[in-house]
Image 1 (spheres, rainbow, N blue to C red):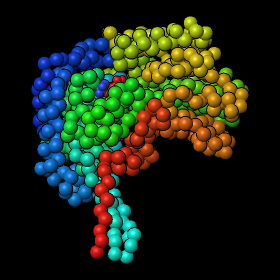
Image 2 (spheres, rainbow, N blue to C red):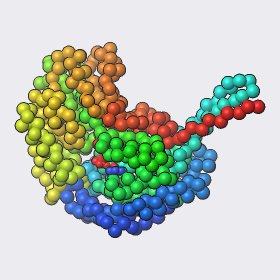
Image 3 (cartoon, helix red, strand yellow):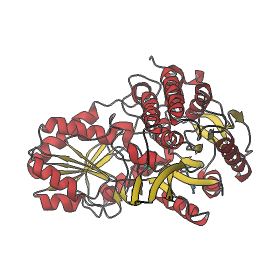
Image 4 (cartoon, rainbow, N blue to C red):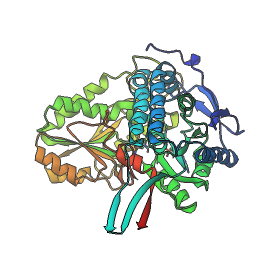
Length: 490
Ligand code: NAD
């Protein structure tokens, strides 16, 4: 794919309910291109009435279509066809995704669109390969479990990987036979509408997959509280996760899956297999998507003997990055989602420097395109665990560096009081790697690598305030089913 011309990308600004585009919501939110700050559309905010219409449509489709009742093999076949259509649509979908988000076109083509398709394909395979349990507890008695879909699942997605994050929610929910109402982030609302159109083309019955647009306070909250929503699956900030859990508790004790924030450590030992390679990995894990990644490896915890070489290697990798708009092939450093967020990042960096941290590189906004915001990949050394940049989820390309001497100190530094999403351990001592994997309080531990490629079979999800439940893996599929026990005397 070549560079693309942003003004030539056309988006639909509406809701998608019952298989058709629906207008509605007189309040409009400005939707900006993060790359240059240009307002390119107004997003209608669905109020409680429109949310009700979407959920009723989903409920009706769940009850009257054959989505849940057909042979699961057929459901799997339709979902696979949907995945194929998404993949084949890359020339349209990738620019749409790149235009409105922080995803450079090269990444959107190579990762976001194919991974969205692959996620749906992965879950399609579970539809007909899942059974229950049977137990004969007496000779005249049989007990069994049957898994059933919930009905209507509400999915709420963030802006950092709009299509991929949505697919991790809707893939398992639909494969399990549910109907879904998805609310994308109000900052990146449009690309998923194209995916919804393709769902109809693939043969998913109208009303089984709906998209409702709007903010969190009105649209998101009404969706979570709707009496016909039986489960909520959410990816976003820890603060919003808590609000959603409250809404679910107050409106029917609904089960929730919460994928929330993180502040993940990268622990590098001096005996790591190849320190220059580790440095490149650590750099990529905090500069990819400009650090706007839930599992961004934002805290480097490095053994004294390796610190100088690793930090120098990271700084070199940072220098090679090129900030630019998402529609240019050459862009390797993504824009920050908004000017407000870029200023917030800068504020945290400056306050941490004022508190005594030492700036190794970066520490400022990068030259901008139009009114877009870019932040220079930043390294802060000489920090301690009490400092703001070490404690808060920055969601930007900012790496803090802490030096340790022994295993116990590394573990103490790695522990975060609130978050437990992911961690990296780099060492050639397999015993130590496994001891760390067992001891670290994190939902994912990567050893001698960092980040997720195509290993969908291994679930992802956080410990502590980083969330509950899992995306991906068999576990994500099963979380979209409820279990009925049937006990028979004969
Ligand atoms: P956010 O919490 O601000 O918003 C996420 C979504 O929730 C949006 O669609 C928003 O409109 C909606 N929302 C906001 N308030 C709501 C409410 N009261 N009720 C219902 N919905 C509401 O998060 P964000 O800024 O879009 O995303 C960044 C955050 O997401 C970061 O903290 C990041 O770590 C986290 N994240 C986590 C994972 C993971 O897998 N753990 C993955 C990606 C992003």
